[in-house]
Length: 355
Ligand SMILES: Nc1ncnc2c1ncn2[C@@H]1O[C@H](COP(=O)(O)OP(=O)(O)OP(=O)(O)O)[C@@H](O)[C@H]1O
Ligand SMILES: [Mg+2]
Image (cartoon, rainbow, N blue to C red; front, side):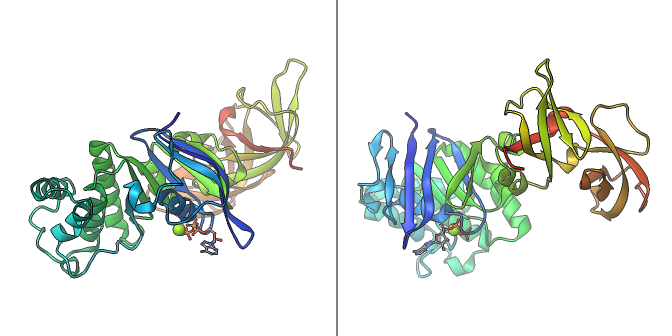
């Protein structure tokens, strides 16, 4: 039994499901991200765990006990909302100690815990400032400290870094990871930012239209996406339509536009039409044809320089492929003929049975 379990968790608004039979388990100490596009049901899920919304169906168990029957304030969870909602008339330490007063923690212990958590989020020396005298990142850390000081069994974060600028967000990502690791609090973070989810999480649950598409480590969901949606949502990809065939020896081949490619051994779906994902960074591009089973030639259609790499659109028999080229290498010219190749394992079947 996992530490937190969501079973068939469902929430409908006016008959329309916002969260649709969600099954997710979270282990003790784990950092799980709920990742998905706007409106896919992330906040609704978090609100049901926090107790601010009642599920329409399904249940939630924490530590093997039903959670959805417990009143929100009795759940003792740490929650950080997108708008940090700090009390403007209270100082940093008053904001942080507020939750301990509600819990009637004795004053001496409360003072010690507030001091500890202020150190943890690196706000020493700012305890007597008011929120308006802090930067966005510092306010964010107060919100986090306020959630952590009650030593919650579960920390719920809804887009905690979304209104920080890019540089500060990067810094706060590392801070958040350091803090979560050092305290070990089981954490669920909602985000629509795939790189944030990748950088912070032990596991990512990718949601689409209220449903769970895939849950796995950042590497699993990126390298082995379970659906076309997941492969497209996590980074850039080329989606191709093809057909899986199996030879008499059982070895799979994939036909795309009259070209035949070897299928990697771990693709076990049955023969028929398939959707495939081929990531731009997995395509090697060169002037000379490599002697490789997975190879096509094409013409450069357009190119963009991004500093750390070139991005090419290459027209070929499979369609227009997005391909990354190294920044150090001499760039290919428009209309130049190039050869592209990839390892069979990088051509992933993401959906079967679609024509
Ligand atoms: N109180 C409500 N009444 C009616 N519909 C709602 C309510 N709350 C949310 N919804 C709908 O439920 C769906 C999921 O909303 P939710 O807020 O969970 O999305 P989200 O994944 O958090 O999106 P975002 O990334 O934009 O915050 C949306 O279609 C939304 O319009
Ligand atoms: Mg939301």
